[in-house]
Length: 175
Image (cartoon, helix red, strand yellow):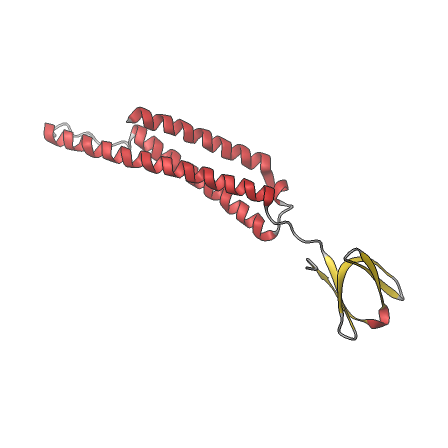
């Protein structure tokens, strides 16, 4: 039982190393291209994976080595056997927890990395122009001069005379 727990502990230590490497390699630059919600989700997934891996490593070490305890020299043979059985049961529970935490950590990290690859990207920023008659145009600002505001809307340049502009506002996305 103890040797199995030691092997799982070593595996979880490798997983913690992988999580650290992923955090360093992926870094903040990778998530900068994601929308705000996706950035937060990636951070939470990776943090959750790290915490679960650390808990798994703790449970694996406790299963392998136990916690320091006082030894009672005056215990009877029956008491010693009972304690040994309880210790083995606790080690089995800890090993199961370590295995579950390890696989959950791997799942969270995989989801976080997948989200950085396939997550939603922010839309292109644009300008929303409301004309005095109430019509709305939204697109990329091409230029402004004293006479006209030029926007690229769906690939076509549109011109709005300055006198017809009721309001203009910068927007995150024109969708």
